[in-house]
Structure formats: C-alpha cells, structure tokens
Length: 164
Length: 269
Image (cartoon, rainbow over the protein chains, first blue to last red):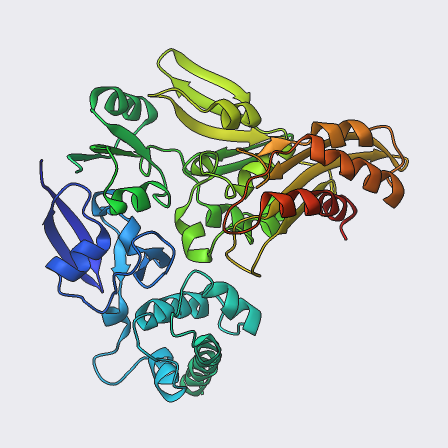
C-alpha cells in the first residue's frame, strides 16, 4: 500500500498531507487536521451530516477520496465561523433554537451557506430543496428552515448596512 | 482494502489502469462506489477515478447534444440549453448528491434510481463506449440492459434535441424532494396535426433496469393525441413492466399506478 502526498486548501490555508489510498476527505479533516466540526454519519451519502464545500459546492466528505480532489479548496464549519463571534447563519440557528442534539447542524449550516451564496433571497421551498439531502434525526426541520430564512434576512440587511 | 487510487489524465490511460490494476473499479462521482467501499464488504482493491480524464463537459450543437460521462448532474442543471431536463434533474436525490453524481454513473445505478437514464432512453440517446479495440456507439437502452464489459468505459452520451414541448416527464415519489421512484416516466412525443407521428417512452422503477414502453408507443402512434387515446395506450404499459417490491412501493402498487402516471406524463396533467 503506497501512501501519497495530497495538497488541499482547507479554510484558506494550504495544507499538504500524507494519505493512505482511498482516505476520504472526512478522514483527513477529522483525523489529521483536527477539524472535528464536520460529523461522520452514515458514510452512505444518505444523511448529509458530513457536508463541506469543495470549490464552493456542497459535497459529502465521506464519499470523496482526497487523491481525487488534489488542489481543491475545502471549506468546513470551522472556516465559516469568523475569528470573533458567529456567522449570521450560526446566529440564526442559535437564536431560532434550530439545534437540538446538534449532530446535523454543521452539515445543515454548510448547505445553507451554499444556498445563500447562490440565492440570497430563497423561498421556503428553495430551503427545503437545499436541505433535502440532510437528515435531522431529532426532526427539527421547521426550526432549521425558519433559521435559514432568518439568516438570509440577516445577511441581506448586513450587506445593505455595509452598502449604506 | 484499497491499495491504489489512480488518477488517469485521459481515457487511454484510464483503460491501461483498468487492465493492469487488480480488483479495479471505475470511480466517477463516487455516490454509488464510495458507500460500498465505506461499508467494507467489497473486494475492490483499486479505484480508477475519471475526475481528471477529460470526460466533463456539455456541447450543444444544432442537431446534437453531447454530454461527457463525468459531467455532474448539477452541471446539467446549470446548462440553459438543457432546461427541458430541469424538472427531471430536480427530482434526483439532493442538490449535494447532484454536485457529485455524474451522467455516466447514472447509467449504472440500481433501480429505482437512475432517472436521468430514463430521460436519455426516451431521447433516443447513444452511449459512446471506449473498449480494448476502440470505440463503439450503441443505444443507451442497450448499455443499460446488457452493461459494459470489464475494462470498458462509457465516455459520453449524445442525443438530438427534442422539439419544443415534445419532451414529457413525471416521477411518482414518496416525498417532494430526494426520493427514489415509485415510477418514472419520460417521453418524446411528436405530433403532426394533432396525431402522434412518433413516440418514444421510457419507464423507471418498474423493472430490473429502465425500460422502453414499446407497447404504449405502438398503441399511441398514428392516433389522435387526446385523453381517450392516451388513456387507452397508457394501459398497455403493463405489458412492458416487471415491477418489484422495495421500501418505496410494492410491485402491486407500482403496476396499479404506472398507467396513470404514463397518462399524466403524456398529457402534462
């Protein structure tokens, strides 16, 4: 078994890592990079809790061998979180009681971040579609959908305030 | 346990890896292969990734649309010239899976998945397959029913653009989003003066692979395209299907509702 060196930009920082064949992105994030905010769930692509952004698009990190994404830009929940305080999506989840056990939360927030980057003013149906690959086993979907819609308002008004 | 993940930069290189590496399997988007690997019961020892083999991209030219096998479903959704496929793509899994899953991979997923393939069969699409002795081109429905040989790679699919409003699609599901098919119907129906001059209809979720509904096509061709004729032709679908029980629906239910959904797809109900 031959290990290989893979380079990734993770949360803005270039990283090189020695990986065993077939190591998945979640293996690397959690085991060698210490980024445990990304959760390991079903490993079957069914639950979405391991969702991160790869080159700006959501991807399930349990299904990506890192050798195949050499050079990619990866963003995790740690990268989304600002140095001080919380991201508006995180604020909205916190204030809207949209976390219950919290296991699905980082995946939900990454999916929400991708949605709001593409569509700053989503309809409720857009939000439901966006999170349709993410399971909340506490079944707290309504609060999560409300929080993402609230986050959209927060981000728009912050952008508005900045412009003014 | 995996020994190698090969990253060929071209199709010939991918073919060399496939023939030289023991226990090698093609990896496209990974949404089918990786769950199997993660489960840990497989016998694969090598992955040959198509991600950098130059198989991504869509070309829309007059008369012919070509989709590279490694093109993701999201890339298809983002292609304005393929807007007619949007309602079908929107029913496939979740946006995140569509960011990963590929057009070529969709040909090989188990039923009741593979709705893009149902569309491709209705469109009369052809698959280009690279093998040891060069390339061959065959109808997608043949690739789907007989598979490909070890070492062969589907490199692209191509089809003629359907006339405006000729493409029909419906998918009966258990949930609004991210649900496998109870039954999927895709069709290209061409009318001349209100009469069906040609019809290609494909069904998903109701047999071991996506299938052509040739009995419906035969019953419909030459008939007035009205509710009575469409309803009568849709009932013929029972001759074309061999549904199975799964977690989504029973075989009995699938057979019961297939003619209804064929009618609804054709009439846009």
